[in-house]
Length: 136
View 1: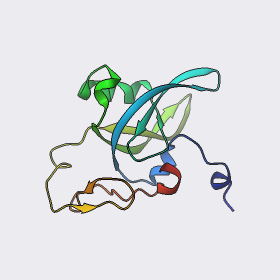
View 2: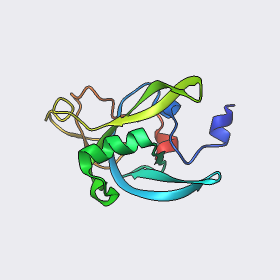
View 3: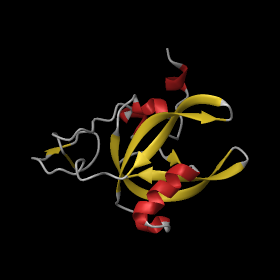
View 4: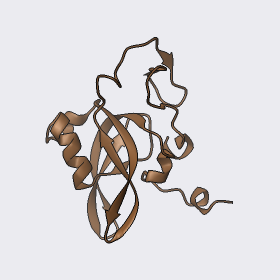
């Protein structure tokens, strides 16, 4: 029995990505209390889990889609994990990027069984989300 399955988080963790790049569509941003602080939580279409935004990810998205989070609605994003140094310790973190032309190559579409909308099967991205049960 895995403790993480018994006490699932409302928020994404780098481990949820299982080393894969995952394409998502942004839905909305909310301020939420996390511990003693108010944090920005980014929600995605067709998913229940949100990603807590840090400064790096916030500015990455703002550089592409604008500083107003209302403008982020319905925009694509790719999530991936990297190792980062945080408070003197190295550990996995979620990072995001805007899809490139290579990511957006057109190909015959098929329906994604996990989320609503089509999938690009020839893409280098793995759209089957490994954490679907938790993330959905």
